Image (cartoon, rainbow over all chains, first blue to last red; front, side, top):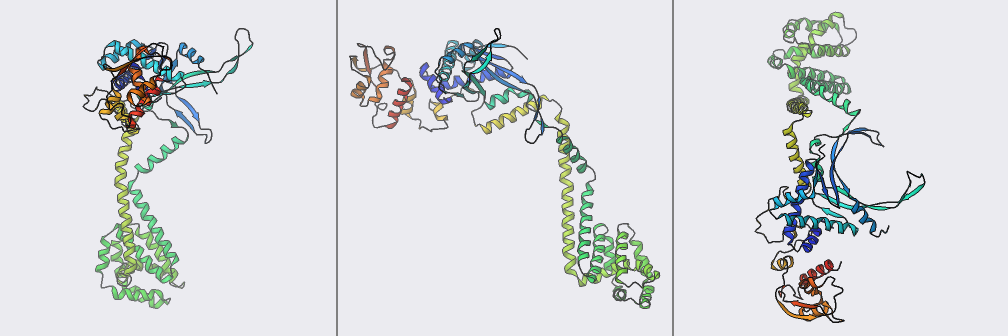
Length: 96
Length: 455
């Protein structure tokens, strides 16, 4: 579901107007982003953790042209699901 | 690395403070949010949140492995995993400290950098002189192709043009020497003849002149030309030339050329003017090349010196650049949300939607606002065989509007598909615009709600 649908679903669940839900969502996202920028780990119970990890710089070789490139280090956001969520996922029927 | 872990409670507190809502409300919101995301994921859908990222399920195939204790082979079952891909904006904000770094190619990069710099900085005039020499060689090539008589004249022209480029004074001298015209003509004709005697006489006559003119023609670039042209002169004149003539002729060309330019001016204006024009253009280009590169060079060196200095201020400006770029790529509302005093109709999400521009009118407001059912026009008791859709048709005119009856009696109806017998259902009084059978928007809205409730 995309952003809009998410807001609609939440609005009906909470019996709150969509505009309010939309604003709250925006503020929540903003707050989370700020915390992540501060390199903090955010944990949601029974859902998972968002953490910031550093990727070291590395030498990569282009397989075709054989040009060696030095990729600089960077910080990335990582999500790790909690075990409770993992178990819930096992229950759903899988068809592939 | 700060291993500070922040609980959801802290987030709730921050959100409550920023949004000016009660902590309980913020807590409920967060719970609902996480719950909704989970539900969607468990249903197999992906969840995309703007400016944050997308959650989706990743299926991992079953694989063989070994039990570490017993050593026997086991199969790890296939499983679904929740994966999160951060949005560009989030990525950039988090990567702020390393934002100024770029991937760098090795080996080839070193060579490229070194060769560029010295060429441009040293010797600006070199470009100019290079062009001049190119033009010289071009013209001499043209000379080589043309006929012998023409050759002489062109060489003389080259000589003249060289003088024009570097020494303007001589031109004046040449033009002023109108007296020599007659003598010049004679010399010109005589040079063609191979007889020694006829050559000797005019040589003697004009001997006085060359010396004066030669003095003015002191600079060096001229002499090589003289040597060049005199050699050709010798070729044109016959091989019987004595050393004396050769020697004297070396001095003659200087005068003859300068004097003959006057005749040339009169005889061959057509050839001389375009070549002069082209050379002026060339010198103009050279000047153009000279000045702007100086500016560019100044900028380049400035940037390079700053490159390796970690400057806080620079980082901030880079953030702004990133924000500007990401804003350009993903047009979005401003990152810092101030709860706007909205004069606009209440439902902002729909008006912001990229997909469907719905007219925000009173009907839309009815659709989006909470519907509170206070007034009721009737009530019905559920018997076997009674259905909300039938009731809706009876009271509202279309069975799609059962959703409103359901909403009004939500607390009594846990599952709209199965309602306990004997339940008292109250039929709410609805705004006539909401249940207008002829308005397609009413019907689609009702169907939307139907999908939502009967998931």
